[in-house]
Length: 130
Length: 130
DNA sequence: CTGAATCCCCAACGATACTG
DNA sequence: CAGTATCGTTGGGGATTCAG
Image (cartoon, rainbow over all chains, first blue to last red; front, side, top):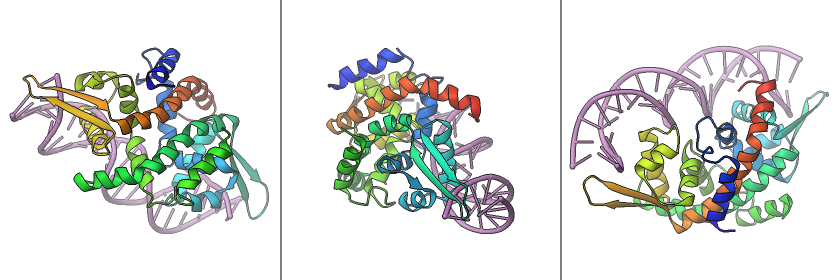
């Protein structure tokens, strides 16, 4: 599919509204593209993970931000949280059906990023600032 | 393609490294998922646009942030800037070949968001906070 | 082990004014 | 028209502490 076809498909949903500041997609886009949103979602793409696993996998995330990101994604119905009532606590996070649909669109992006970012960073770093 | 296949494809590039804080994709991901990055890139998906057009299209963006976003994307080689030496100034922005490749992965995401965000926002708004 | 609550800072962001 | 420069604010986000 060409880019212009993709653009036309996008516009059929919200003609002239996707760029509007009041568009609902702005809200969800903000959640997903929040500092840790994409990384958390992509981490959960492969399998269910426990809190501690996520904490270690998503390198650099603080406890506060991981909790906050997870809560936002859970409220949006993208992530499912299952807490086993045991001591010590055992909590598992997984993608909902909705979350899987989103991640299917996120994975190709991440793959493109993984492939092209080294060249981009090197090139940009040479000429300008980081 | 299933999600697990996508995950496997992703991992083949940077085994165990996409989530690393030092991974180059982190940098580009930050640029793209910056507050206005996705919106600017998607706006340019359809056609070349002038500064003023972008300013009006991407509703809510300030002049400062538009300039900053465009500069970052230009340094990354995703956006091409062409300034005609006339008075009054006339500057056009378009996607580079690299930028087109990225936007091809962004458009399906935006389409998914446009389709599902209304329900997500409504549902999330009912139970929790905004 | 999984979080919630608190403190605090800085840098991202917006508004305004100015320039070629 | 297309920016740059400056200033003020805010809330995102990290470190730490406490609880179940």
